Length: 149
Image 1: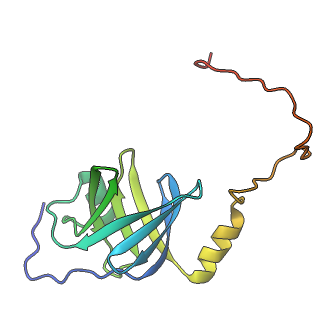
Image 2: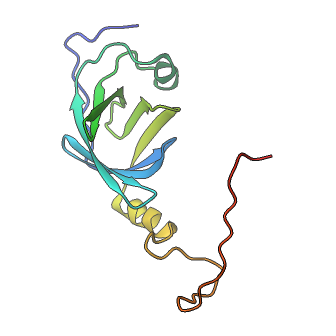
């Protein structure tokens, strides 16, 4: 698709990013490290490298117009290392990459927006529900398994 010659690499803006098209809600970037904050309350670190990583994925090129992947995101799960390439916008406030299922977009947000987003969610240690708490009165458990239909 294209080549980068003597082109300056974008720099990322440190701070909170809202995730769209991902299994997590937000990411905090600080330098070359990102911390994913999952919807389940678990966090995971990711290493960030900026550079020329070849042609961008056709879907990413279609959505960003940038022909070259300029960011590498790598994470370690046990002994497995996962690497994804994507595109950082010129202003450093948007990252677009292809996850295993779809295109994921990370959009920078202010600290106030990040705090408001955190308040929108339910607390992981005590999610709200319509049932009266009765820890001394154990009820019946109904477990239904199998494919739908």
